[in-house]
Amino acid sequence: MKVNELAPRSNVDEIYVKVVKVSEPRKVFGRDGISHKVSDVLVGDESGTIIMTLWDNSISMVKEGESVRVENAYISTFKGSMRLSLKKNGGNISVVDRDIEVNTKNNMSDRIVEDSNSYGYYGRRRGYRKRY
Image (cartoon, rainbow, N blue to C red; front, side, top):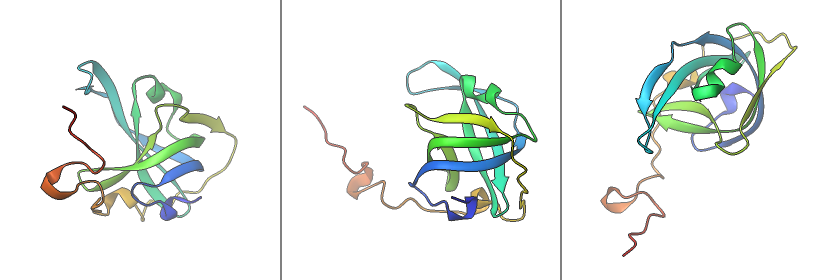
């Protein structure tokens, strides 16, 4: 799979990318009320780039200039922007010995996308049922 083939809400079984830039981690509070570190990592291949969001211990697994294999990930949207994210159960990053050229002119995260299928009537998430 190549970066330019990624689409909102799609699963990514495996993709090989090069780490272009790692942002400084920032602190955020998760839904669980616990403080977490999160970092935006620009990754790409010859077809384009995308922002990969890494949390907590995953941040230290990548360094700028390294080629990595990303397994068990998915494409989420954040403020209309596509993001590559690891699945909580089974998502993995490993450094590989590959020379990957990066096309920085096609940033998939710069494209505004709408995730129209996630919210239904009355603004509720689809599949959400009130439990009484």
